[in-house]
Image (cartoon, rainbow, N blue to C red; front, side, top):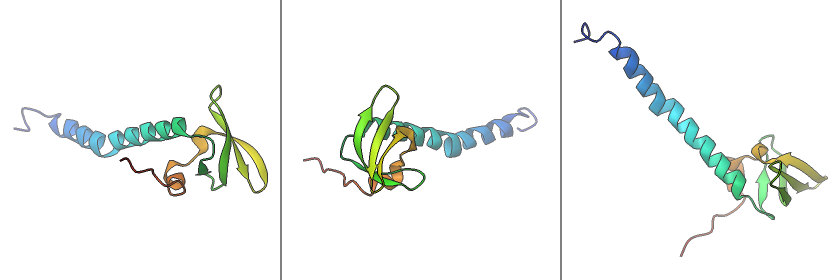
Length: 96
């Protein structure tokens, strides 16, 4: 059978790589984008670099936010906020 379809193993390797590597990464990026768009004032967050703070201002023009920390206020891009670490700080509201 392989003599008839010499490219079949190569195609199968690509399909497996897509479903186990590429597709989950694309889903994670989509979830991160949704999380960044859903941020609101008062949310406690952690940036990817480990900075803890609370959102005090959101700017939709340049997709940034102002974070209040113990050291003062800092402006960050929303993409710098870590979804995984920040979700631990904000309890998810249960739907009734």
